[in-house]
Length: 490
Image 1 (cartoon, helix red, strand yellow):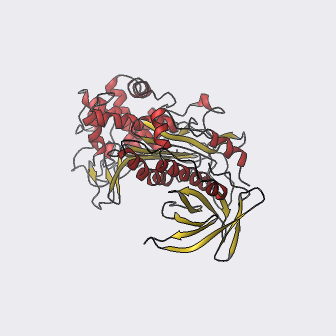
Image 2 (cartoon, one colour):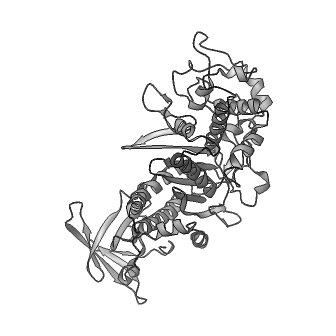
């Protein structure tokens, strides 16, 4: 059975932040989209057996909504919230890349510098000695030709023995390049770890000291650390859980620290802090600011700097850059033992989505992408209006039928207010907007499906119980009762 009590607690912790965010959240188009996000996130997390999920939705300088569902710690029944700390693993690469570009702008290095100019111990075996040197830019774009990892078994459980700086140096002379520099894309944790080593060398500080002083503190990211915070174990740090496998139970994984690989995969953060990181980027781009990083440098990081010959992969400086339909996104994901997270930004719309899970296969990228898909049309429409339409109270007849009902052959169907009437969406769903069905009321408790051409289709009739709430609905002569496990629609 789903932990309904924990879900109810988590729902109580959902919150728009600030007066401007509240005004945006009150727009009826935004409000109905937020309701769909909440219903879908709660159900999808439960059906995927993800222990905990935290998220945030950003519009420019506003956190429109952030919160959590499920458990940060299953054994302790500790709810996941927007302030729960997760490993963000490879999202760490964004902070390392910002640090590298800060030093570039300060004249400490050039992007076309050979890595060995800054790290004399970087003496990897060159499989293609006739080709160009590996450069700093190649590290940030994953076009260096380096192997994916330092030669240590740190993705192997149960202890995940990440190497120290000294161990990375020890092994680098035994490793070989995989491809010629600048020829192919090869994602490389080794490469970004070397970028972090360059940051330390050229700044004269430890890597952790530099990024804390020059990025995390200036941006007010008080819950973000360049290494997994052991002091938060049993407190705000979510417990990480393993893969689902063939069953429905996930085992907790051992606590780990990333040590020498920290610049590539060590950071921990919260949904609210990653939202603030996104807000800083939007602020820089719209004001041409110089806060932490020049606006043009940030634009440079967001642009593709390497395109794989297959054209399947484009990469900026640290940032993944991709197209979905006619839209271009930037961001990064993170997958570490027990955690999967994602940060997605649409810079020209100033909309961002954050999704964080404490499951190794938590599908965070899909959570973040679907949050964006649901929210962006409503946010953009609301932002175009000079006066925000005041949200109307939901019609009592619609309130009576709102809820989650049993599905035909498993799953559920959620009924939510939509455009003055109702919409239904099947749960679970990998793409809730595609599965959204709109209905028009034709009688007090009867609705007809609105076809894509605007014509009306089949009827949906609700059966009310003694308490005045719908106990079931009838569709195609079949009855579907209200779910006894799902929480109330917010």
